[in-house]
Image 1: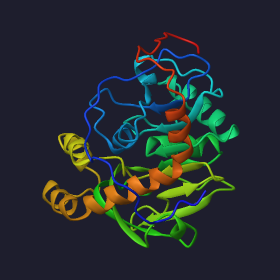
Image 2: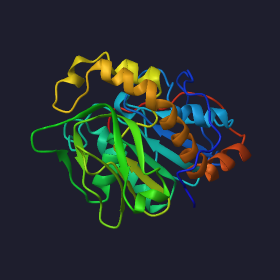
Image 3: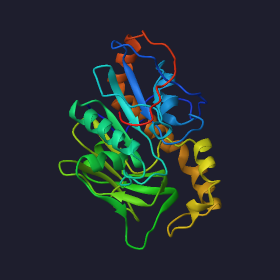
Image 4: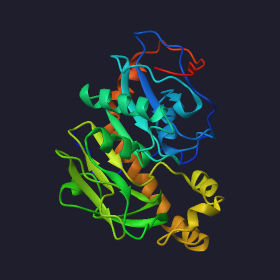
Length: 278
């Protein structure tokens, strides 16, 4: 796979979608989105797949929706960010199911993208530590990331991206460190050819980020930008972030898109809820 820093065809930055899921058959090709928020799906991942005629399956384990085992029907997956700490399995048992899902995707070489908490889930499964830095800094706003030598195959040398986090993953053994920022050294990694973890939020369209700006708690840590600075940087840099991420998805998820578009035997339906176990 050749994921380069070049820009592929773009898709709408903001797409409103309701709750999407499948009542699945074993023959259905599925792109599975694992989410930690119960809000509009107006991010760039959904926009990308819908622009290519693919209806992703959304599963929200934190609401009790079941993550089945990864089987041959799963052709791609994205684990999104969220407010939960990746190491709080005892408080949030659904995190164990997400780690099992990520582990199965990695073992079966299903294309997997982890964003923020999703990347931390992947890093944990791969044996890396996740936690705060000394002084408890955070990044909330738009920050410049710099590609490492290995990362130059996937990123421009410098790119401003949306951030909303205060924990950092260590780079897992066997993974390539791809990008860093001034505050947080570990912004992206690649594991094999079919797994990427991003600490930042390239999926966050302006409408997504503006919802996050309504949370006063996001501004309290050292390193967070004020709203005026966020808005200024968003106006300058978000179009470039959008173009880069759409191009990245174009290359990384090309096999998933082709498989899902070939297999049209699916029907919108409800996700299955569970109360305990898996």
